[in-house]
Image 1 (tube, helix red, strand yellow):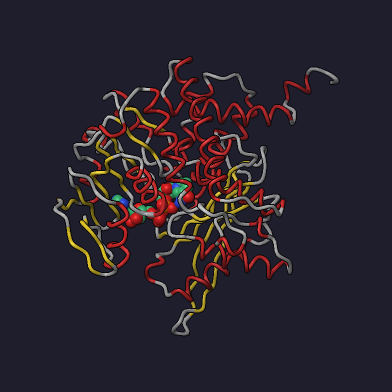
Image 2: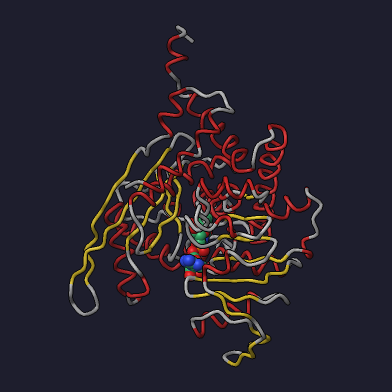
Length: 430
Ligand code: NAD
């Protein structure tokens, strides 16, 4: 079954009607250039052996090395990883990075493993795919349920295999191993740059909006935290276990403090080490958060969250996609009919890969910059490319997702055309 992938590449249809590209571009973008499935043996703490299935997909590398994260989740499948690798290909082009797209994942629930078991699994995955990756051909990074510690183990394993330090093989590493200060917050921060640019274009006052965030993990937390620091009001938050709502607004930092200590979301008035005072708030199921009466719904969990089944019940006027593929194509049509503006994933969540690009470039150059300078560069890239997408949408009278794809696929097509097509070779000598 390739349900998610078929839906993902169906997005190309309307784009190809709008730009003049060779049929070869369509053919090359319709399937991944390389997909590998590996089975990773891991010695468990109790002495038993378990085999975990993992994947790595390099979707297209015309514009540069494959780039894309590694996900640990029980639902990881080749269909999902291929879709994510396709989105990475488009995304890297939308923000004009010299990368193609890739993705990796292991079907595992890391909550059921000890730290040592996760370390062995992470190192085992790198041993399995070591021949495929490298700073010039494929550069992994963190994704759902993976973090800088895991990237550090993976970079270390790669260094042991090739018997030299190659920090540019993986991004999202700890700063002590050549990582970038501020990388962890870059996806959320980047999405806020895009969102802020859209609001100022529409002359909407950020303080007037009620925002709900689905997915209070890395990307969702930093988005909510930086949004509140900048005068936005976040009224709803959810993770896979449940959601909370308060019309007075939530403090993401305190909610995260409680989540980390007690493993549940609760609105907090204050927290002083482990002593917290609870604020008044409503408890919701994860599904209810999607249907709350808010102005903006930020999707920062997983793909296929707004579908034909629940799109009609979305009450927000704007949807910000930080997760990859959180709105299905059918749901997109329903939201469009309701007049909901969707800020698309391939633009909104590109802050993470943009920061990864800075990290990769620094590792290769051996020159390191400070966090403030990198945050400034991130803002420039995200706002600049967002303006290009918004201008295109206005000029061609198309929705923002189609505009982002027109920009990204157009850049990929330029690179493919430059390598030669049948039309070019049919026209004689250069
Ligand atoms: P994460 O694992 O840190 O967080 C995911 C969060 O979503 C967790 O809190 C989880 O509990 C929650 N969640 C899962 N199912 C849910 C549900 N049904 N309802 C509510 N919450 C639910 O992962 P992350 O790195 O923050 O990634 C989140 C999304 O953003 C993914 O789609 C990822 O591909 C995308 N993304 C992340 C980055 C990055 O740099 N982290 C970059 C680009 C895109």
